[in-house]
Image (tube, rainbow, N blue to C red; front, side):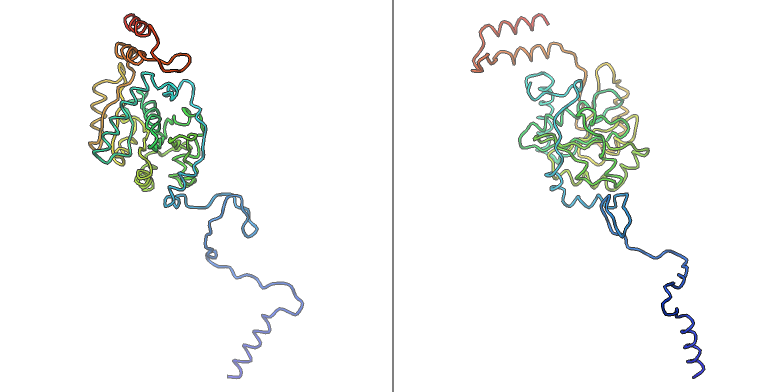
Length: 328
């Protein structure tokens, strides 16, 4: 037994560095690197002497504080593109604005008889006016004082919301779904209005795969309880499967057709492509200024406000409107 103790003592003396020697014993190599628990850090910070170049966090965590994110949304000015053909709140008597108010009234009535908060606006083919309809419907709904409206650009292939409202395209929905931006950074509020926007985000090569993520369905299910209307601009039904998938996640679908462009066959195939029977109706776009608009102007121009703003009837206005209607 004493020989064992002597051998251990001798081995310990050989492995002990000499006094005053600053050299360390060589590190024993291991088959795998030591495990380090990941700690979320903010972009640009320094941790353990190493500069952090990327943002490490979970953007989906913010959904439990969704209302706080909405309340603190970044505000942007209402500065639409000049030729975007958006309804003008300062000209409520324009015929297109009245048409969208009629659409708003019908949808709000339907909302009283069935659960209806998330809405997909799509078309059978491109260039039929789906983005134009989605943006104007969102603007018209937001004009109601008690309504809070969210317009989301889910057309990742040809986004338009950023161009129409002249705002940066990113961060947007693709950034949120990929986990590179939280919800609080992708939502924006238009001035002091009730309209909120989410742009498409950075371009992606797999739009349909992003829409199949569980985070997409979870987000749509969550925002419907915080907004009166959530309006989605989606790709055309016959050119991408995105709109069909989004329709299964939402309460209703509106199909936009254009006079002189959309064929009956394309409308039939578009309706058949929808996985669920949740089509609320069809919006006809591209109508000419004919008898309907002339009579509309005749009716609304009967009473006008004078130069002094007294709201009295302007003499001879009825005859003038009748003349215009007869010559149109």
